[in-house]
Amino acid sequence: MTKLIALIALIVLISGSAITVSAQITAFATGTANVITPIQIINAGDLNFGNISVNSTSAGKVILTPDNVRSATGGVTLPVAVGTYSSASFKVTGISSSTYAITLPPTACIISNGSNSITVDNFTSNPSGTGALSNGGSQTINVGATLNVNAGQVSGTYISVTGFPVKVNYN
Image 1 (cartoon, rainbow, N blue to C red):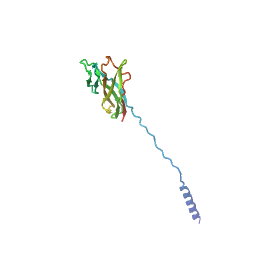
Image 2: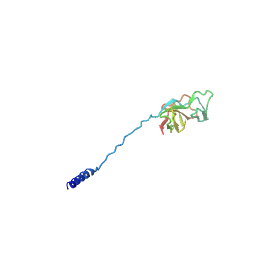
Image 3: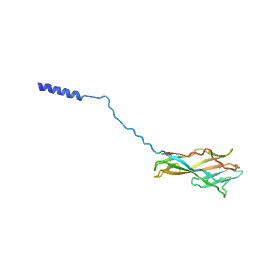
Image 4: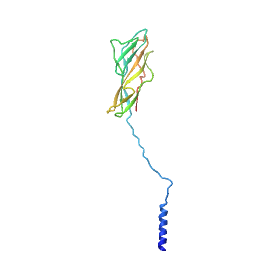
C-alpha cells in the first residue's frame, strides 16, 4: 500500500508539472538596412550652339546632337567661323555596374540676351533613357538639343540664367 500511495503521488507530481500551458509566446526578428552610395551627377560642360547666322525673314533651327554634330534648317545658316560649339556633358557616379534612368527637360528652356530670347527644346542624350555605370562607378552623359531661332533674331550672346535640369536615379 505504501508503494501504491508513493506511485500515485509520483504520477500526480509528474502530471502537474507537465501540464504547464502558456497562452502567449514571443519570437524576435532583426532589422537590417543597407545604406548605398547615392547616385550623383555634376556638370562637366555646358551646351553651346556656336556661331549662327539668321535670315531676316525666315525662322530656323540649329540642331546639336549629343555627339557634337551640328546642322541648321530654315532661315539659319552655320557660318565658316563656327565659334565654339559643344553638347552638354554630365558626369554620373555611383555604385559600380549599376543602371540608372536619365530624365531630360520635358519642356522648352529659354536662353536670353536682355529682353530677346530663344527657346531650346527637343533634348536628347547619349546614352538615351538609361545609363550603366562602369566597374569604376562612373559614366558620362552627353546632351544635345534644338535651338529655335526667330526670323530676324537680334544679334548677341544668348545665355540661360537658370540652366536646364538633367536628372538621374538608380533603376
